[in-house]
Image 1 (tube, rainbow, N blue to C red):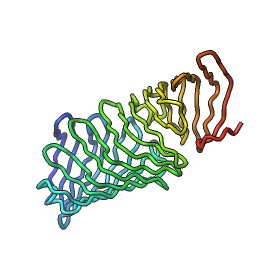
Image 2 (image 1 turned 120 degrees about the vertical axis):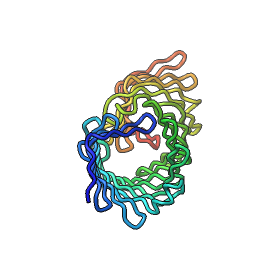
Image 3 (image 1 turned 30 degrees about the horizontal axis):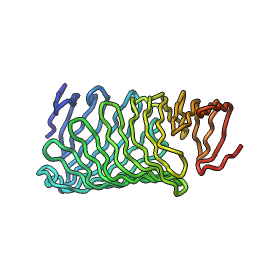
Length: 274
């Protein structure tokens, strides 16, 4: 037989799920659903202790398609750590499909991926993740993007990402700490304020304090109306980073008694192009 549930509503902590549901042949189907304020539809099937899912959610009216599986669901329901596989297609957010493999558990109101590997095109991210008290924490993460490597920890809470990472470009490390505010706007290609501290003895005379408005869109990072202070040097202007090429235009550099203004193009290895 088939069990039908119309206009159901479920709540867990601050999150809500509502819609229409049917259950039959070990498959739960949700239509016209809402997860918090996001449209949701999908199926979940149970077979031989494996849970598989196939669905779609709209985040700010942008489609995110996902499929996945969770092995040994009985162990998971008892608070155990079990294998998870997930595929996500989100053209508005990711240029390539995301595949995720890891170990997943839920216990004491904490969702955790003690170990995971995520692949997006040629880029990879490995480490651990935990969702607790409406905060997502990434621990001991290593992300490799082309010839850049980022390692360390990050926390997402109240639409703010707090970083404590080491960024390595051309084998030269830079310690980066601070915050990016309004991360949802940043992911949508809009401007988000940043406050960062950068420590790179091989490239900077002293720790640099960087503030400004960041934009990420079409693989291009822009930093508008930024101010960077490192020792006696103050740099202000607009910057664009694409394909390891940094363009500052306009830019003004000040020391105690000198001011230089104009435009500058350089590669991330530190060699001035022109």
